[in-house]
Image 1 (spheres, rainbow, N blue to C red):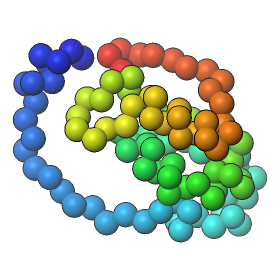
Image 2 (image 1 turned 45 degrees about the vertical axis):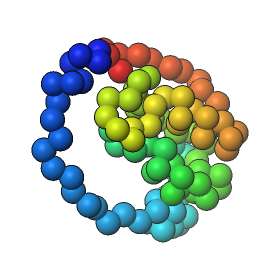
Image 3 (image 1 turned 90 degrees about the vertical axis):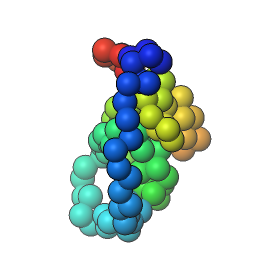
Image 4 (image 1 turned 120 degrees about the vertical axis):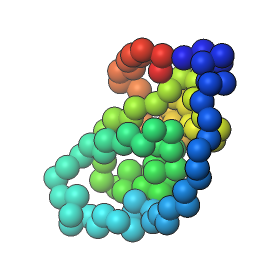
Length: 102
């Protein structure tokens, strides 16, 4: 998607949503033997991961993320943002795929 295409989108509404950190949502006994976290949130992956820092460090060996190389809307995290955050937690990229305009 190029810049001229983005200009055709219009912000229709903003919705406030109450959130809780992922670490507060899942307890270690619920996670059990699962060792991979899959996150697809259309641009807020880094915020989800920030709320899951304890679980990431203690229970997950793998994280699968869907991101965009370029932000498609204001405040969206990019692939670089997410990769930098995960690298600080000692995760490394095993495979990277690019599909479509993302």
